[in-house]
Length: 174
Image 1 (tube, rainbow, N blue to C red):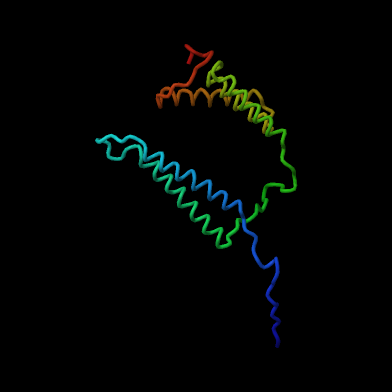
Image 2 (cartoon, rainbow, N blue to C red):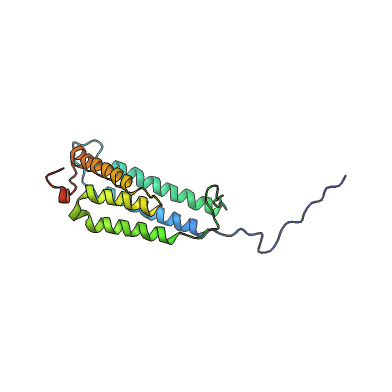
């Protein structure tokens, strides 16, 4: 009984390709994390506040820095992400630019009209427009669901959190 041993692969195929995108992501994570920690350290802390406003930004920034270091080390060791298996995605189909442009237009319309219409109506248009851009054909239902969600979120912010959102044309009604 004999076993065949394949010779080791030499040449350009033997060295794994470096994934520079992972290093780029690690650099962005490091920069955002370091800036978050730096910015948190410049916050004023009251003497009677045991926790203060620094704790959570410092924890999140430190987590970003640690994640960036782990990602850089894993990339240096040759770790590469697995490509998308495409279980429910057709990887051969091109990007649907029409849908993306419709969504961008709906968001820009919302930005342009929110101060005049108010959040309740602009939010309803945002929801209905996004549903339309993504393929929904039930316009009345989408507008009604959007209106319920937008009015509910308006009351949640204004009454629940005390954060004022513009009522727009519905001033005095909401």
